[in-house]
Amino acid sequence: MSAENVAFVVIGRNEGERLRDCLRALLGLTHHVVYVDSASTDGSSELARNMDVLTVELDPNILLCAARGRNEGFREVRKRFPGCEYVHFIDGDCVIATGWLETAIDFLQSHPNAAVACGRRFERFPDASMYNRLCDEEWNTSVGKATASGGDSLVRSSAFEQVGGFRSDLKAGEEPEMCSRLRAAGWEIWRLDAKMTEHDARIFRFGQWWNRMIRGGYGYAEVWRLTARSVFGNQLRSAFTWAIGVPLIILLAASLLGKPILLVAVPAAYFLQIARIAARRRFSLHAWQSAMLLVLAKIPETLGAISYFLGRKPERLTDYKAVTQ
Image 1 (tube, rainbow, N blue to C red):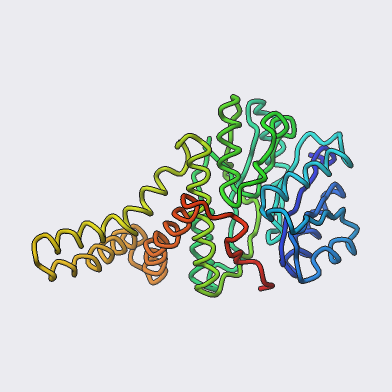
Image 2: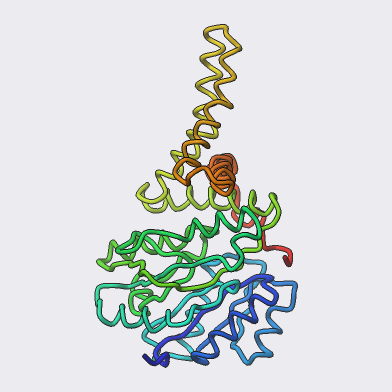
């Protein structure tokens, strides 16, 4: 299957050599490649230009986010490669898997109601840190018709234009929000049983992971409101339940009953939840680590959601990729 009717939009910020690997793989398929840079300080734009890739640099005085980058990239695609029937969005820290593009194109061509096809994103170094391994588990979503895709996906250009693309004012959660509009317009989203992209998270520090979870919580809250509470409701309920609800109920019970000893129920409740999640993963070391992070994540997710509800501007969120990793 020819890639001549496909263009790639790559977004990145301080991706370093990961960007070179990403672009090299795409240029082996087609020269219809646009790179959009979000105020990198590591020479990413120069790297892309030296590889003869069309490069767009976002104005840093306007909100820097994946949604805006992808929209700007798509506009450049329409200007430079107007005949492309499909656009493939891919993050600059990813490398496309061999055979994926042919699989995705074949699927969209044989499923005219499908607007988006995505596959299995997998971590390049899942054992490099417990945060990387958790990312790898996060990418392993269910196969079949889906409600949303991730950042890497093949999208039908006409469907993308029909719904107006991504919302450029969203700091996070832009894919589920756009997919909700696509589904409302009668389009389908599909997750295929095929390797799609190799991702290199490089999350080695607790602070990186914490900031990523805060951004996620902020995105949950914003998209939940924008989609009339139809997206991310479960995630928000879970976050607020474990970060605020459980400890608050136990604290009130201890106070009303005059039994401070009841406060031991707080760590006990968290431990039981961690053990329950670890049990589903057969109690391996990785299972305990993942379970601990999944429960702990409720705190920064709740902080991110609260910051949104209190009116905090998205540009004030700390980006875990702000500095070269």
